[in-house]
Image 1 (cartoon, protein in one colour):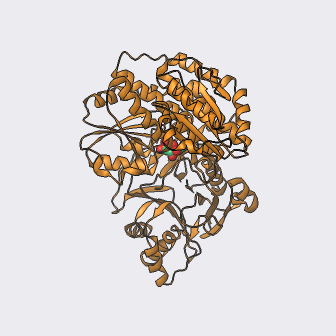
Image 2 (cartoon, rainbow, N blue to C red):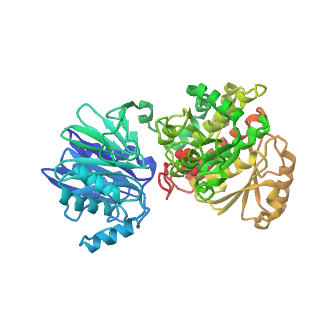
Length: 585
Ligand code: F6R
């Protein structure tokens, strides 16, 4: 998703900005640009492609000046073109902006500005911010008044940084993240701490509806009515700046291989919050578990394990769907919101709906300083370190471990030896050769189906998601029992079917489904701790406690998806069209 950055200080801004944009590359983008101010003049360079590509073409990092802004764009309004890339300059050229989010009333505002004589070079919603700022600045000659007037006119979700030709920098936040990095003699404005972590670990998380003005090395933080706003300086975890691949070819592979460790660390620093969550669950009238993508798949597992091991009913709710049925949330319930980034707009919206219904919010997040963490009553930390690969891997298994830890608090009879489990994960990862061989078989195929029953069904859905993202192969998770109700029609020799089939109560029914599939000529990959002649390819799962089957099933699947991506020559870390932190709806 778009990343924004601003620098105000005593060093040359453009190399710092380019570095920050590179660190935030994992968020996903299609074009990049930088603008700086020097001698009361704004200079701007931008283009389509990766930061390094555009930089070697136009030397973004050679722009002069000690104040600057930069952006990586993930297209929402308008195609991927040089003109649509940020920064955007106002008609006078005296103001430049970078923006993250969506301006919902941009068409109306654009028309109004056009009627007043303003021209637009791009198809974006963002360019209207630059011209609105110009209009108000020309009248008021005051940055504070200008920002206040501008934010009162725009509707939507946004964070923007505006650079004025007179050397002032301002930034406003409304439902999109914006963080101020406070250095010794300089300031950073960024959508992500990775944008400045190399330079400072002191951060101010700008509150929603606040803006900041940087002027001659001092800053003021105000609310949208112009009143001074409260803020605090937080020390951000340096660990999140440690995002290097090391000896691994890709972040995704590194993150898959970190799992023997991360399954031990999940929730470890927030055990009190886990206990508190168990207490809330015990006393709750209704429990909803919400999330998006992979985190929603964790919510599906939460439902299964709470009912199986604690006899408690929990309802999984897809965050992006909740806005269409807000009344389905009963008052005074609890909402467990799961999000690696803690910044997914859909999840934040779901939480807002929950708060309106007076619900307690429990957040399971990786980023403890994220917007979701700050909205929640109780915060449980995944504690798995930065996840840079766009596809969620280690964060998923950490989420599941946390859910199991909650279950353990609710039912003392459930004993889980996570140390042993960590060893099993290591064993799966130690010998990837067979998985690499199977990945070769997936190179030319266009459809994969994944079958699982009961608690293994969410894993089938998660498998489909991993394969789609990493390999671009059409993949679909199917509940085993549904096969005969339709999907069987699709089975022929052109398709592969992955059977998630551990030795639990679903085993024999799922094996029967595998036979029915094989009889139609499809190739069958079995993920199981029991070998069978039905499987054309067998991915052996270690013999472990049944409770932990779901977590151990997904690990070979992550490897398979990764190696299949290599076979297909796609970039596993940055799949096309996707972003790591989906901060727009
Ligand atoms: C899948 C994936 C996405 C995220 C989803 C939610 O591999 O990465 O589906 O799971 O965008 O992200 P978070 O957990 O940050 O809210």
